[in-house]
Image 1: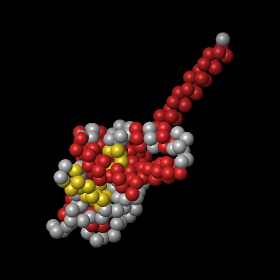
Image 2 (image 1 turned 90 degrees about the horizontal axis):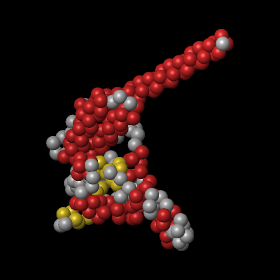
Image 3 (image 1 turned 60 degrees about the horizontal axis):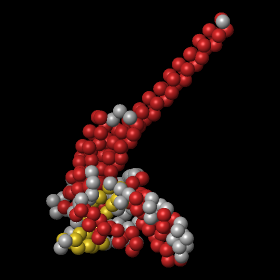
Length: 246
């Protein structure tokens, strides 16, 4: 009986020790995530305050306005964050703001500055590599790899409600409707289909989605996986990430 009591006591001590170590590790990882998010947030604040665009450079001015909006949003996320994932989202918002700052610097003819990482969504969505134009309901929309007189709105790229919007300069921020409303409207979907979708096949957009499109087209033309009902017909391209997200 005494041996059993000792074993139970030792077991309780061991369980308590393991729980304490697990909590200590979780607290340390949470603190690391908080510090990482805070670092990006402070870096964005410093660069936003120290950069001013000339009045005759509307593209750079708009990019800095968007960077300031991300700074405010990241600050609000940091105040509310209570988990590692929430701190990671705050860091992503700050990093996106820094990408707007980088775009503003390039539009002003300055160097790009220190390296800024791209989020997984930005890598998937890719970037505009060639100028694209489309008419939708009598209105002309433009996407460009560099700022122009008719493309003054920068977007660093990302997955917007399941659709890949590549990074680049646009005539107007037509994707914001989906970001604010939480779903794509008919008008925004029409712009996406007319302006962005063709770019995946023509090479005007790079990135993971564009690579998947090219691979699928190659399989179709060669009679490979598509002919056999493989990846193109029912896999990732046709019914998985690319098709299913739409």
